[in-house]
Amino acid sequence: MIEINFVTSNKNKVREFKEILGDKVFLNHIELEYPEMRSDDPSEITKVAAKQLAEKLQKTVICEDSGLFIKSLKGFPGTCSKYIHQRIGLQGILKLMERIKDRSCEYISAVGYCEPGKDPLAFVGSEKGALAKEIRGAHGFGHDPIFIPEGSKKTYGEDADVEKHKKFRRRAVEKLMEFLSR
Image (cartoon, rainbow, N blue to C red; front, side, top):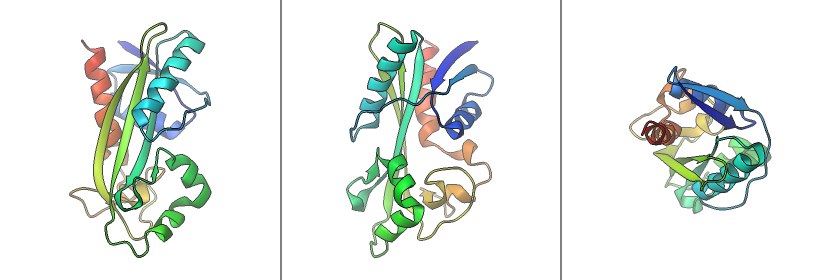
């Protein structure tokens, strides 16, 4: 069985990773806050973080960074999604979008992987969708109650099995697993 050291302070991400990985992997959660570089590219952020964490902990690690990129807001909040969510919340984002017709957006997730002494890698997954006009549902976390995945009429917040259906993070994790199984 493969063991993965997942460094995050976000218990929701741990739950989601466990749902994705099932019994194929033992997920060792290392709860640790760490500084993140500022970049518009989640893969760059996770590669730098994974390298620093692998060297600091002297363990093979993964970390994850994701964001909601809204087309009409030029990618905002993007990689600052957590910060913006804490400051203005979902209502604030919806307020910014009040008179905007183009509600297309994309969730992007990057999983950084690094072994001590080696170069880091990033595995990226994305999912296109649109922003709802109001908060809908109480499932998931982050922007799930306002994100409507392509091909659906419901937000992730309205989906009781959101961890099973979310595609952007699942796609990134599946790419990591494909790499690890070589």
